[in-house]
Image (cartoon, rainbow, N blue to C red; front, side, top):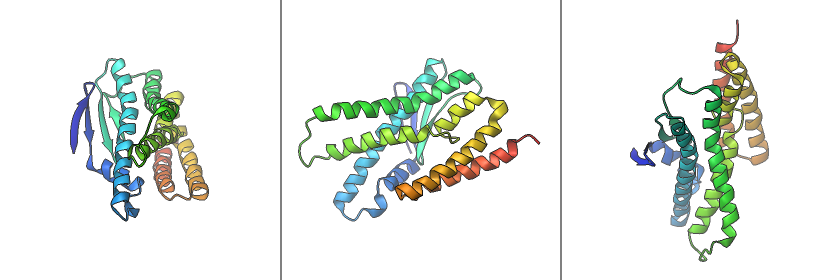
Length: 212
């Protein structure tokens, strides 16, 4: 486990973060030293982009006068803070700040990329490509209305605690739709696995929280 601070915010990076990022980056199919190097480039790009995402959450939390800490774990991370201290509007703003900052960062890279001189054969090119891809794709994916992703948490903040069961029902339906679409149109199995897990968790929570 790696621990450090950035802008006064403690950060903890768990081993599973590196493993899962390497998996997403094609680590299972790396057949030679070049492939392995490209996987490492993707892992570093993913680390940087997701750190920016979580900093968006953490810095906004601190703006509200609360202490924050960042943890990067399997398939992402989260910014923690004392519970029960934010109202619904503040919770929405804190949640939205993460993908918003990450998306803006990705767009800024797209704008600046043509003016950057990159030597032929440099690893900076795949690094920049991966950094843009992770920043845009990760921020959009996180805004899907599927709890506990950012979009699901923003939906929960809008609907309020009395309609939490609706949050889980909507999350279950959307997760199934996204999972099936991901398999049929993107040909990926990773996204359907994630969405199946979220759909199952939300369906169980929906049944537990529905009015009797």
